[in-house]
Length: 394
Image 1 (cartoon, rainbow, N blue to C red):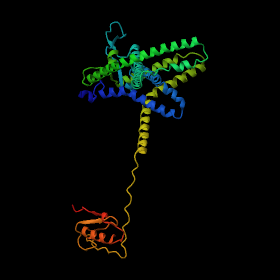
Image 2 (tube, rainbow, N blue to C red; image 1 turned 30 degrees about the vertical axis):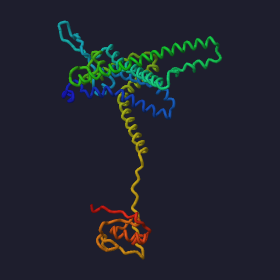
Image 3 (spheres, one colour; image 1 turned 180 degrees about the vertical axis):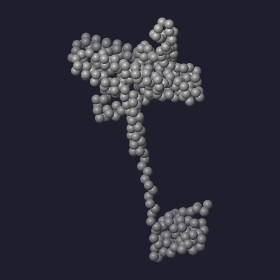
Image 4 (cartoon, rainbow, N blue to C red; image 1 turned 90 degrees about the horizontal axis):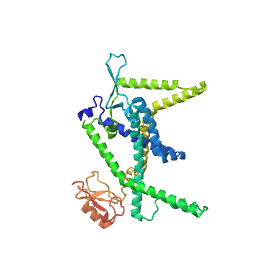
């Protein structure tokens, strides 16, 4: 386990594999968020959001195919400098001569392994997302049925039949029968998914957790059941492998450019299109990762702005009121603030008169207010209920 955390050797750490596995989900969330923002100004993009699963599956199919073709690794694995290698390495004899028995080990992925890798990376997650959406709809329908009863029609059969007002009665009955059959098939399929999908999901998550735990404890060389089924393990790419992959990509592209046929103007257009495609594929990885960080930052920025706008406004404390003025006919204030203005002695049981704010002895101010109904200094009207005891000496 310490070896896994340290990250030494050709075997990737658990954290590298986990980051590579979670990258497509983060990329999809960032793309969905960006398309949702752009759709506010361009309503045409709502059609893309309606087919979000298909759009993302097509994008990942292109990226995964290009990455497996050029680097022998998935899109997220190549970002972390990882490569896929077959567990059973094929052996090729060198062609230097019949007497030579030297063997060359070929660790490059075969075409079948690349195709199956795309299936496990793109096709299976797409079907899983579709099954998840069907299961969510079925669960909502069951909840509505439990709350409102079985009288609601789950599929809009009436809408399809009501539009046939001008057709004959036979056509209406035929259409109603076809719709009811399709509705019954959809209903049975959704019910089957509602029963089977939780078990399928739990089995998949349990196997994935078991493989990840064993990989963390150095109990297996496979991080996921998919890699075990394909017979592939993930390892770090060396500098020599990176150079060989770049040279192999150059040879493949040169070979494709040499195969162009047709008039000179057509070959020029094909060459320009291929160069544009190569450039976009080369920078697609960096551009998409930069887009993830950019839109995550924008999401955080706008979320922080919304929190600041929704947060309650905290106003600064108001300034203290001005000091009350001493009346001409009132008692003068003693030079020592610790003395009572009435008895000119040190205050005993100090109390404040809230009408003016001056502090006296409790007995002195109680007698004065009870007799004159006003403050002896400011001559402001006051009552005995406005006398408050001060406990600053406790």
